[in-house]
Amino acid sequence: MNQSNVKPVHVVFVAGKSGSVAVMKLSPDMWIPPIERKPAGVPKIVALGGDGIGPEVVEVTLRCIDALGVELEVARPIHGTDAVRELDNPLPDETKRTIDAADAVLFGAIDTSLGNAKAALLYLRFDLAMYANLRPVTSVDCIPSVIGGDNTNLVIVRELTEGMYPGREGQLSDLTAKWPEYRDRRGKELPKEGAFAIRVITPEAVKRLVKFGIRLAKHRKDKGYSRGHISIVHKANVLQTSDGLFAEICREHIEESGLSYDEIYVDEAARRLVAEPQDYDVIVTSNLFGDVLSDVASEVMGGMPMVPSAAIGDTGAYFEACHGSAPDIVGTGKANPAATILSGAMMLSYLGQTEAASRLIDATLGTIRSGTMTGDLGGSATTDSFADAVCGWLK
Ligand code: IPM
Ligand code: MN
Image (cartoon, rainbow, N blue to C red; front, side, top):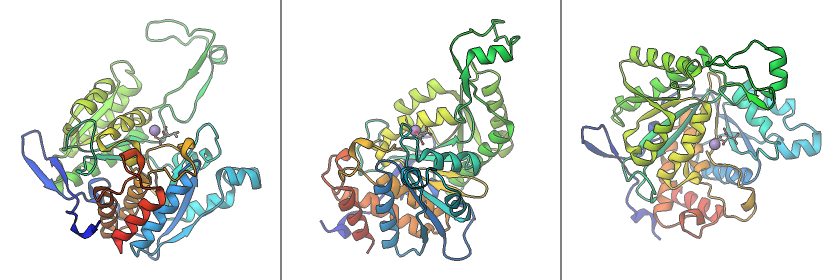
């Protein structure tokens, strides 16, 4: 197929509920606002393939970035399974130092049942505090969607450092022994047997998250990409104290910003993601809710193998597909690298290479439109042949 004959990539979106519809080219800054952390010299990036199909999709992404002609210094430090085998440590100090010195990290995937690459992900999320997890879901005209029609252009801004995720769990017998006087909202004691999990919401974490969400929503509004609306998603009707705090801090900051907002309980938010995803603009939510909602929303874009993500902190960022490590298809060539390639585009945008990021998005979606796609989208391309086609598009 002659790719140059294929029409350019567009996304159709509704700018507001008023009925005005605009057609626009998908641009990386719909997904990630300008961060202004452009490295002085050649950007240093760290590639961490992780588990399962992670290394496969990361390598082809680097090949696509190379075809763009963008100069990057790429380090591939030992981590995960290899590091456990060779050094009995999934994340050696030397690897941590390489990550610390990098401008950005391109991450593959982790298999939580293996636990090996998890150390790297936890280091990025919790030690380096890459807290704002941007998960954009955009209708693209080359990918049939099971939900939402053609007009979805939303970004989930998921908190990535607290909530249920730090793994604060234990036995109820230990908790009741240490805190015998604890009573729930109904005045009841804790059961003596079983397990508990602590969900923590802190004002600092919510504040930095919502400020990032506001920055993104303002940028999208200023550029005419969307109406500049934030949906605060929580469950404060049940989690009155923790999500009460989450909602209150979000509300205060958004009110100050002058943007419009609404508050939606997470169960209703999930229903609306299926029924009318096009009504969302920016969603700000806590860690576990964002995890679940991003999987649901991915169906707008053809499913998990398509959805990219960025996790931005105050001093660094990592970029990773939303999907998992797909251990069942490792080495078969069946993995769809699109989400990681699109995450690579978000990384380029973060590094100030917006034009290259835009070309990479066009090439990826253009390749799909021209009929080259992996099995999950109904095609017969392999991970490599898909990447070859993207590279061909870029030459
Ligand atoms: C994701 C993944 C991870 C998460 C897992 C692998 C720990 O599902 O990035 O969405 O739950 O955050
Ligand atoms: Mn997930």
